[in-house]
Length: 105
Image 1 (tube, one colour):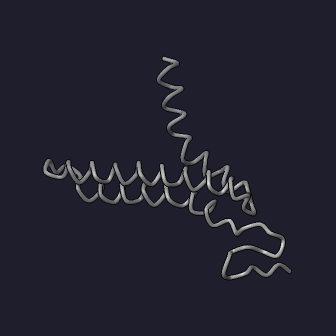
Image 2: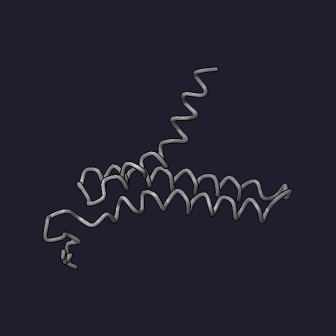
Protein backbone atom coordinates (compact mmCIF):
# COMPACT_ATOMS: atom_id res chain seq x y z
CA UNK A 1 0.00 0.00 0.00
CA UNK A 2 1.27 3.45 -0.89
CA UNK A 3 1.16 6.09 1.83
CA UNK A 4 1.57 9.65 0.55
CA UNK A 5 3.65 12.04 2.55
CA UNK A 6 1.29 14.82 3.61
CA UNK A 7 3.94 17.55 3.52
CA UNK A 8 5.16 17.03 -0.07
CA UNK A 9 2.28 15.23 -1.78
CA UNK A 10 4.70 12.55 -2.94
CA UNK A 11 4.06 8.84 -2.62
CA UNK A 12 6.74 6.38 -1.57
CA UNK A 13 7.21 5.56 -5.25
CA UNK A 14 8.15 9.18 -5.99
CA UNK A 15 5.19 10.20 -8.17
CA UNK A 16 3.21 13.24 -7.07
CA UNK A 17 -0.51 13.03 -6.51
CA UNK A 18 -2.56 13.96 -9.62
CA UNK A 19 -3.70 17.31 -8.21
CA UNK A 20 -2.82 19.51 -11.20
CA UNK A 21 -4.20 16.95 -13.64
CA UNK A 22 -7.51 16.80 -11.80
CA UNK A 23 -7.79 20.58 -11.53
CA UNK A 24 -7.00 20.97 -15.23
CA UNK A 25 -10.15 18.97 -16.00
CA UNK A 26 -12.39 20.61 -13.38
CA UNK A 27 -11.57 24.30 -13.98
CA UNK A 28 -13.10 24.67 -17.47
CA UNK A 29 -16.35 23.09 -16.28
CA UNK A 30 -16.50 25.53 -13.38
CA UNK A 31 -15.94 28.43 -15.79
CA UNK A 32 -18.60 27.10 -18.15
CA UNK A 33 -21.00 26.69 -15.21
CA UNK A 34 -20.45 30.32 -14.17
CA UNK A 35 -20.99 31.44 -17.77
CA UNK A 36 -24.24 29.44 -18.06
CA UNK A 37 -25.52 30.60 -14.68
CA UNK A 38 -24.96 34.26 -15.48
CA UNK A 39 -26.35 33.81 -19.00
CA UNK A 40 -29.52 32.11 -17.76
CA UNK A 41 -30.09 34.68 -15.02
CA UNK A 42 -29.71 37.65 -17.34
CA UNK A 43 -31.47 36.45 -20.47
CA UNK A 44 -32.89 39.33 -22.47
CA UNK A 45 -31.59 42.15 -20.28
CA UNK A 46 -29.79 44.79 -22.38
CA UNK A 47 -28.03 46.24 -19.34
CA UNK A 48 -26.36 42.90 -18.58
CA UNK A 49 -23.88 42.99 -21.48
CA UNK A 50 -20.89 43.95 -19.27
CA UNK A 51 -21.73 41.13 -16.86
CA UNK A 52 -21.99 38.62 -19.72
CA UNK A 53 -18.63 39.85 -21.02
CA UNK A 54 -17.19 39.31 -17.52
CA UNK A 55 -18.60 35.77 -17.50
CA UNK A 56 -16.98 35.12 -20.88
CA UNK A 57 -13.65 36.37 -19.50
CA UNK A 58 -14.05 33.99 -16.52
CA UNK A 59 -14.64 31.11 -18.95
CA UNK A 60 -11.58 32.08 -21.00
CA UNK A 61 -9.34 32.42 -17.94
CA UNK A 62 -10.50 29.10 -16.51
CA UNK A 63 -9.58 27.40 -19.79
CA UNK A 64 -6.16 29.08 -19.86
CA UNK A 65 -5.50 28.16 -16.22
CA UNK A 66 -6.64 24.59 -16.89
CA UNK A 67 -4.25 24.36 -19.83
CA UNK A 68 -1.34 25.59 -17.73
CA UNK A 69 -2.23 23.13 -14.97
CA UNK A 70 -2.28 20.29 -17.49
CA UNK A 71 1.18 21.28 -18.71
CA UNK A 72 2.41 21.48 -15.12
CA UNK A 73 0.98 18.02 -14.45
CA UNK A 74 2.84 16.63 -17.44
CA UNK A 75 6.05 18.33 -16.32
CA UNK A 76 5.70 17.00 -12.75
CA UNK A 77 5.09 13.48 -14.10
CA UNK A 78 2.13 13.01 -11.79
CA UNK A 79 0.46 9.68 -11.28
CA UNK A 80 -2.38 9.03 -13.74
CA UNK A 81 -0.86 10.98 -16.65
CA UNK A 82 -4.02 10.46 -18.72
CA UNK A 83 -5.67 13.11 -16.52
CA UNK A 84 -3.17 15.70 -17.75
CA UNK A 85 -3.71 14.63 -21.36
CA UNK A 86 -7.47 14.77 -20.92
CA UNK A 87 -7.06 18.21 -19.34
CA UNK A 88 -5.13 19.39 -22.39
CA UNK A 89 -7.85 18.04 -24.65
CA UNK A 90 -10.63 19.71 -22.66
CA UNK A 91 -8.83 23.06 -22.52
CA UNK A 92 -7.18 23.22 -25.94
CA UNK A 93 -9.81 21.28 -27.88
CA UNK A 94 -12.21 24.19 -28.52
CA UNK A 95 -9.34 26.44 -29.65
CA UNK A 96 -7.92 23.81 -32.00
CA UNK A 97 -11.37 23.04 -33.39
CA UNK A 98 -12.04 26.74 -34.01
CA UNK A 99 -8.66 27.25 -35.69
CA UNK A 100 -9.03 24.22 -37.98
CA UNK A 101 -12.68 24.98 -38.77
CA UNK A 102 -11.83 28.58 -39.65
CA UNK A 103 -9.09 27.59 -42.07
CA UNK A 104 -11.00 24.76 -43.76
CA UNK A 105 -13.83 26.97 -44.96
